[in-house]
Amino acid sequence: MSSLSSAPDPFIAFKAVQREGWSHFGPLAIFTTPAAARLVRFARITAGQRVLDVGSGTGVAAITAARLGAQVVGTDLTPELLEQAAENSRISHVDVEWRTADVEALPFGDAQFDVVISQFGHMFAPRPDVATAEMLRVLKPGGTIAFSTWPPDHFTGRMFALTARYAPPPPAGAASPVAWGEPSVVRERLGEAVRQLSFERDMMSINTLSPQHVRHFTEHTAGPVRKLVEALSGSDAAKLAAFRAEYDALAAEYFEMNQMRQSYLMTRAVKA
Ligand SMILES: C[S@@+](CC[C@H](N)C(=O)[O-])C[C@H]1O[C@@H](n2cnc3c(N)ncnc32)[C@H](O)[C@@H]1O
Image (cartoon, rainbow, N blue to C red):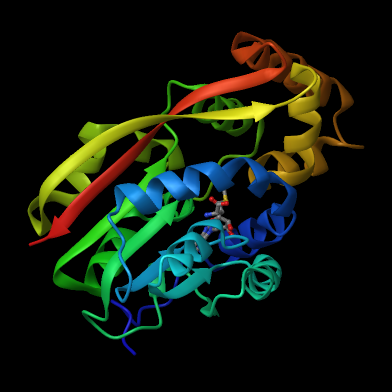
């Protein structure tokens, strides 16, 4: 069991806040469930492969891979979500090993997995270089890394940028999660460590009654938004109202026929 570095983690406090924020994510997984099937297909996962899912949440991608017959380990920073993941795997009658783990310090030896996937998960680690190195370290040479990420120019990416504008600045050195949605950034981050890099875009739909319903839902479930609203409630009502007004205007741009529709990016590459 070796993670890349034994140096102390400068982001321990930041990650504790992230963990608490994400612990309420469960209900949002209804919208990431179809995307999980698309990522598993895009990653070309087949029966018998040893698969690691990073940032599993409630297990949507891990369980989809396990239902194909893969041997899956699902990991996440947030233990509350892995409890729900374990319940989901019991209901689905599949065996998945669930482990609480930070993608920046994976508790696995080198070259253990045929495929490493992450659906909107590893992008939230503050150090993309560390997360990338860890995901590639545990992957066998010739194995596949595949992930889905939010681009900065579509709803969720813009919504996280809006949230960041109202929130206290993150600790120095923490990268923006949505940079992972830019193919040029992904290409640079994976660099020479991979070959056969390819990208695909897909669409996610969220059924909802109004832009305000989307905000109400994400205020309760999406870690960074929840944390911001918690901080502003009771301390700065005017700022909270301004954030909510901006959020609603942004959501309205994507709302049509009681759905929000937005594009996201899928990346796949083979470890050199
Ligand atoms: C948007 S949710 C996605 C969950 C799931 N993959 C899905 O698609 O439904 C983001 C997930 O990333 C996890 N996460 C955030 N930072 C992480 C880190 N440093 N290491 C591992 N997981 C992390 C959160 O706990 C959360 O479960």
